[in-house]
Length: 416
Image (cartoon, rainbow, N blue to C red; front, side, top):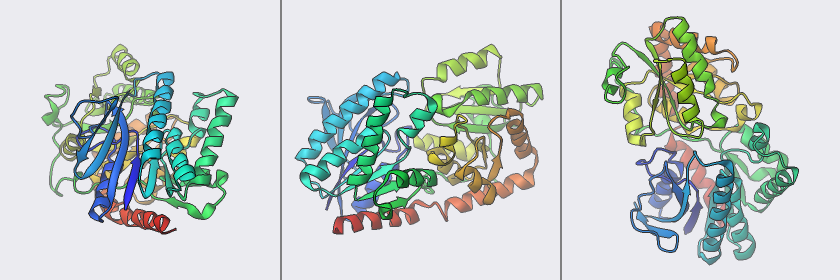
């Protein structure tokens, strides 16, 4: 059985973006399937291919995965117009490959929504079973953010979304709110499945019980870090959706409280990063440190040895509350990090119910700052959160268990 896996941002752990498609592809190969990936050239990703592009495409075998990488450069720093053009170009070129493919099943994962187009074409013109995985709801999120306002464009995207659900043999949502969004526009609600991101408990491992974090090991990255500092990490895109101005306010609150022993580290890239850096510099914030993206292996090492807690930050938009499933949350808890979150929703409920961190009001940076102070000084509570986070990552969200459910869906669709 050959599976054509369409994911714009495919990356091995050598890249600095999510590796869900890489990990799931490896699981399929272990079960005896052939897997062919279609992706583009994301600056955060490392596909494993190093050869030259020929006619805008390079291909090769990466750990038994056949990878097709288009020479379509993509970055979070691109303008919205440039991103849309790249999305459409990727969809067009992927569709041409699909129409020539001898695959037994097409698996397309968003975002963007346009990755559904080659899956729909493969289903309609070649009768290839099609599974559509939804990581973020489009056009709901860009509509709420005010990024897309044109009613004609919104209508076209809504039609594409409904078509994706109609023609797919199964739809997979990564968050409860995503599944609810699919149900509102799907004709067959029985083919909707919830499978969140999973925890890489082999790569991300917590320190031994008596181990001590040492932020000063990061001095080669930032001389501002001391061994006695408490380090809170945000790892991910620095874009409009992330609302990282909130952390500027948190850093200011900590400075006013004279709690400069609590450092906020932001790792990642995005079109808002330069503005955030300039703002932090204008306020002379030595407790807010910006770092370049790192690969997954280095991130796992930082989390294990030098970081005390993870931060979940998003712009205060209700559609985000239950409609996103960030990789960083699962990386944090895999490494045994307590989590402090600044928005309500399903992840906030998990954090409270499982006692793995603290949930704060999205409009109250002072509350967030006090939560970090509490984690630094309430050692009993901190260690409880560490234990619960590690335990949760290895039970409910283990990749091994969630992949079993995922494989069942694929095999069920193929048998139809």
